[in-house]
Amino acid sequence: MRLFIKSRTPAEESITGKLNLLIEGFSRQQVVPVEAIVRSLDLVPDFHLESLREIVYLPEYARAAALGQPGLPCSRSKGEFVQAERRIFVYAFDDPGMFFQVLYHEIGHFVFYLVIGSRVKKRWVTQIYPGSSCVTPYAALNASEDFAETYASYLRRPDVLERDFPEKHAFMHDCVFSGRAGSLKERLRGEPGRESPVRS
Figure: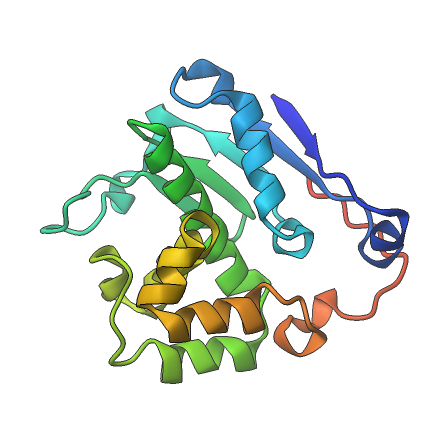
């Protein structure tokens, strides 16, 4: 078990509180060093992780109901964001690239459902996603999967996303990663001094 505490400036802490995130189970695997996992979270803005409780490696508990989509290259579920628990479960990965894609994809689901505001989400669902090219075949399933795959691409290959999908890159940059009050849910706005521990 590893408690991740992201470094913040005193000014950031006074605005949003302390960020704690439990990272558990990854010492049982040999594919990605735990330190690399911790460092990878530094690419994610603090406010994207703020109420996420835990990221857990549980290869033995992949839910039968989450076995992916028939006909797609990766038909077995690699990870899952459980909204009611505010936890991300990582079930399977064969190499570091796959791990980071799964990790950022599931964080993308967390951001889509619990961080960005309804107007921003509605814009993605009604204007950005419909009729657009998707960054991966899996992203074509629905607007939520497209958002999560685009989010992962923004963190992993921003130059490719900007070149090949400029409208989606601009949306991520301006509406998702900016942290502007108009793009966030009400609970994240203007609550100075609020303590928000992110742990289980």
